[in-house]
Length: 311
Image (tube, rainbow, N blue to C red; front, side, top):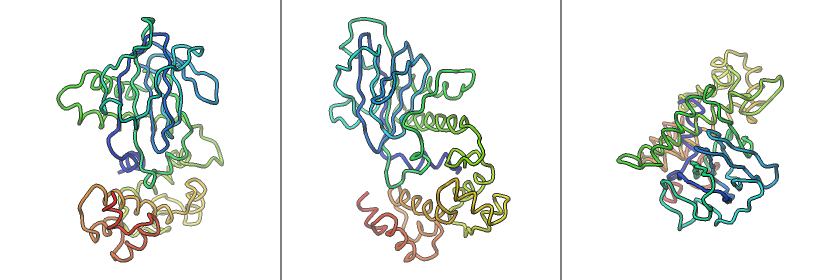
């Protein structure tokens, strides 16, 4: 596994939700703030306006993709002057349609020009959310440009086809396509961050070949007996240079990140599998079940068995 793949694999909990919605002007839809989630909007047809709560309106055209990694509240409307009159949309609403709503039609419009939007939300587990996601801005806007990001737009077309016309296998296909869409959004955003000297953070780390090599090594084999020296060898740097560069970019020392990732992986295995504790301990680099249990409780506040039962 590589870092970006693991970010998506461990963060999401439960089933993602998505909907294929058609609005006719005039219309305005408010989307609730949902902490502990991430949302997206893709404009499939027509255009509309994003109305952030504390920023200027932004025009969105066909093919534009929005990603809200922190579940921030926002409004979409046919015009900046249109008030949001429909009920607030929330993925936690007990009366909302199933996880993949097909071609829902807003009834508040008056037959004006149509806008078709593919929207969705991911529920994230705060205890497993990767720090990469925590450092993202409130809003990522990828304007339509099929010539630059053909893979992103291909994923959008496939997802829109499945959600807009559910068939046999849709329940298995949509979650995989949603994960693919998220991966492309993050990959594109990370690649487009400017390269500047002395910049820190995850965007810089994943554009730094040496730090990325060490991160991939940890994610590829978290059970290996990694030391700062062996990770520095993976990075092709001296021990001191590597430790300094890794810490400045990631925000914690190499072995601190290694421990966090091991215990985050263990939490996912406890939730997703029935493997015995000694097996999970070995998979994440602990030769002693007792040492693993103590480390896990320090990080997650519960012993591994209690964590599994609660999950």
